[in-house]
Amino acid sequence: MQLECGGNKKHHVCAFARLFQHQALVTVVPRLVATLTSDSKHPPMGPEVWEDTWIATPPWPTLGKFRHLLTGEVFTAESVNGRRVLPLARVLNHAPVALLERIS
Image 1: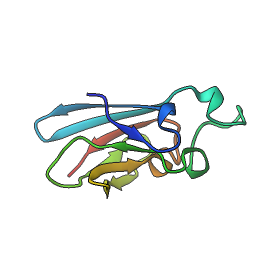
Image 2: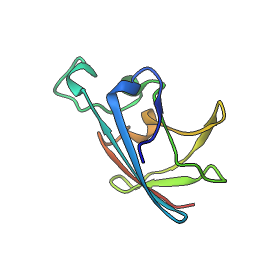
Image 3: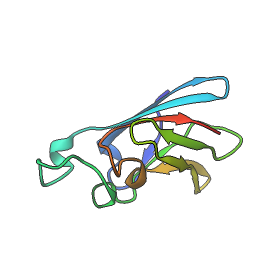
Image 4: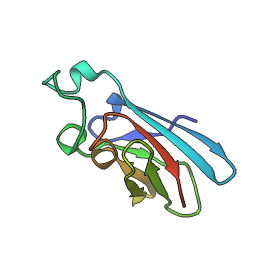
């Protein structure tokens, strides 16, 4: 399933989830990278690139936690305007792509 994206850079991200029972695997990748940053030598990472951009998490009864399988970081979904979201400033802070596993 394609996940909803929002924020200033929402057109620069693709996010998809695969769901099975209470499990989820979320893939997050940047798109249109040439127009995303002014410096092509640095990958699109961090809050200065992603600002307020977010991805919605799959609908679960709780906010849920997700482990970044490439960096080991754990993120808790936040509630913003009734949506459960993950801010890309955090998710794409240490790697330019993300593979997230729902852990709770």
